Length: 268
Image (cartoon, rainbow, N blue to C red; front, top):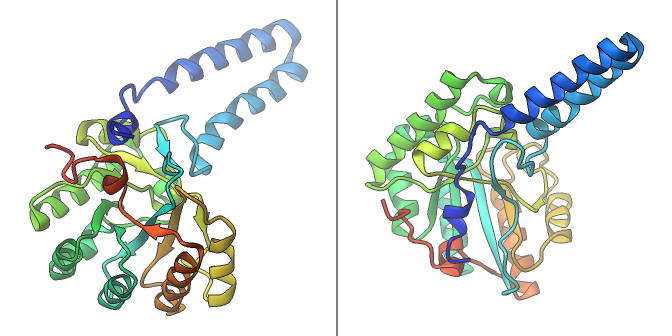
């Protein structure tokens, strides 16, 4: 796992173009050879993989993506999205009680409004990840190349200005990464992270139900997705429940750098 981060940084962000061109040339030939009755359904079918690449958070069609840590050690990677928020300090205190570490995938504009919270996250030994500058949840999947680059780059710049180092991990908003994500990730030396355990706590406030859904997928190497600041107001209780389940299962929440020996600043 020594080169985990470097192996996940996109190296060929436009490789998908070749698949697109080849597939559409094949569709054009089928349409010409057999008519629209064959060509039309083939054209529709040819677009399915490209939509799947956008809608499936673990898809690696457009860029590499980490969905779990490649380890059998009894550790998990706890990730907390959408901060900083009014819940950040309470979450940090909970993590301290359980001697747990987490990576906070933060929104750039929210970080700029509360830089003291970002500094406190780092001071307590946790990680910071890039989760876009403005968190356009309804349209992130549809952003064009310029807006996508601006969202990722501006967040990176904000976090670097606050902490002095640039994050090495990126999580797409709602997990959906379209064809224009890979190029800025390559240029900023960022690796994309998904998850393997989630409870839908960004929208669901039923603490017992959310914790139970997360618990089902807790295993060595799991990447756990949690949130802070959701409108239902139960994210702190959910984190408390998940940490209790980790303790009961003998699983430690650590940063990937602690497992893989990756430099926290990406050696930049």
